[in-house]
Length: 318
Image (cartoon, rainbow, N blue to C red; front, side, top):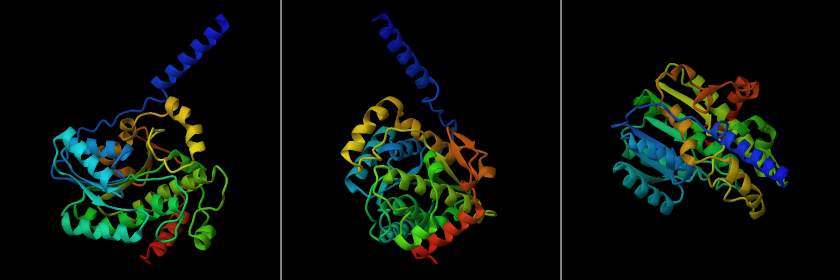
């Protein structure tokens, strides 16, 4: 009995040590105020996106919640306005699974809004199926939708510089790869039906995020727009809400014990969006509010350039 108690005590102590070290994420140290600035945050009706939008609203920004679900987005607007006292928090419809919707959002935004100082490509999902345009859902939303959105808003970002593009990636990019043959033949990043299929697709899409930012930084040289990708941490969000019940049940205890809160998950996004002096690090990848070195495949110039050109063709820009 004593041995069991000793083991349990050791496990509890180890878990508490993890909570105070590995699971404790740093906070964004920027004290920047954003009065007169406009920010777009995709997927801002919940999770990391909502926490990010809330912080930006507290700093005085005009915050556009670019979301698919109108009722959830309007509820988030009400919450953020109530908590911050900032009435310059608004919803605009954006469905990243529809290129038509992305174009409509951009046209609507450019017609109504005179500024864009920060674009935060936050939305992401883990979900099977196809987009409205026939792309794999994860590929279409996590990469192609944000790719098109960024390109369509780029001139406004340049006009309002210095400005920034921040794309939420994930540490899972390290498991990803880009199969251009599969993209060309199936409009998706890979094929399969195993239990890990969606995780594999997600990893590939996050590598796309990093390569997109790597190439975007090259194309933005000489402008006053900089860009960054990031890993937010291992965060409790509803990103796997579309996965199977068995997968959610499997993940539930792991999420409960080892994932941290959405406010912590927003900190690296805020760091990349606000911290002074990051301009020389444009195109780099961040985690825990610090720049990180990445393996060669995440900074491969040839692959990044080809992904850009293929993406242009797929979204109808080429």
